[in-house]
Length: 519
Ligand SMILES: *Cc1c(COP(=O)(O)O)cnc(C)c1O
Image (cartoon, rainbow, N blue to C red; front, side):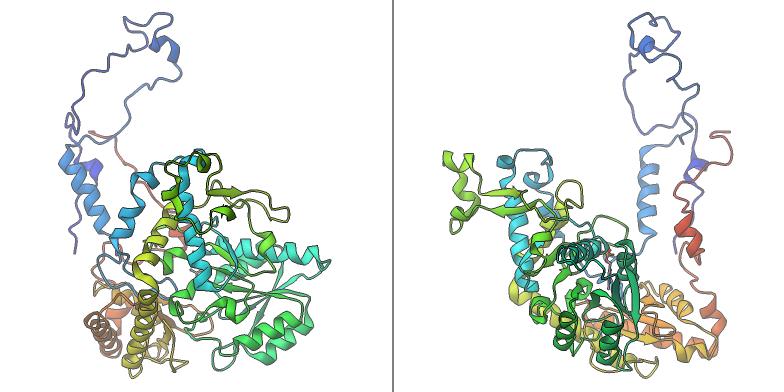
């Protein structure tokens, strides 16, 4: 456990300094240099502080230790196991960060001329091609900044298409009851009514209730996740696609779980009309702390005209050339650069983000895809699925598994049995933290009581998985023998059970001194 030091303000001592700068040489107002036209005169009294800011006075090593310790209070993929279902918290190779940081990428300005940024445009264009290959779609926008943003873009495109064909009266989006909350939020933000559809006993979309829902409402779209949030592949996906299209609606494919099917199955071949890809989940960008992500949306033929503009495009006459290398020495190519922004898209729903997307995340994803290669991505998928099934098989004698059959990259267990000893899913999750591991997602999907949604990812070895099984078994024993120990967990973390609602609504991000500094 980390020893808690007095807050940094309390450690302040007058005169301690982390810097040593020469005197500023700027006259102060009212001082001898304060005459008309001087800096002090220009600033005037109003802008000047009456007193120095109340900053703690500390030497550099103390400041470094303070921030380094703070950084260690968080759990991270780089410090331990992180089986947070649906989030794909896998290890991200550092080489992808390094490539993104190359000055040719990192030091560009978004207002630079297209001729100057050919390398980045080529990387974006190539990423689009890779994503189209992996999803089986036709064209993609890299603009959306996250999965939820991609969802909104997708649904707005569906709405524009439907209005175009005179079917603007269709006012409903169908969402299975296992869906991620962002799906419902997206549909209602786009102005739709949301109809929730109950899952079958097997945890899948029920064809009977799909048919009924399609016939009872003016349906614009079905939003689905495949594999779904129970980690199960929708076996009737082709029939789901046929029924939905026959009813005049389109299908939105939530691609957050793409880590389970890369190189094995493509949404395009399942008949999907639009899919978002969470680059920060499947394609190697550290996430979880609210940092930038990217949620490109890829579409089939129907929605292609509606994609946000501009798109990155490549001149057809340059197809087949060697790419950016050809730029050298050819004055012609400079006048009409190979890669450009395609602005003329009359049916486009318009720009959805400032500039061109979170380009750093896009470069990371491309680096990851190229370095893994087709074989590597396929292997990652297989290992992710194997790891999830290994854990499911080893945990099924201690925890209930409501849909206990072959899963994809994640599965949902329940703390229902432990609840009879007085311990719920939250308590189990909190107790896991005492082992130095992160907890699974809990209480999601909503259709499983006391849900523990476990996604080990492909980057964990067998020893780690076995250690997690041991922790889960121990917590089950404790639930029977000493439930209070579990109910009061965690016991070793710097913060124990914060009020989660208050923490989200009124986050305290700043320590405010109670007494004047140095007082
Ligand atoms: C993560 C996730 C989303 C939302 O993606 P963000 O990138 O977090 O906005 C949507 N659906 C599912 C199933 C997810 O797991």
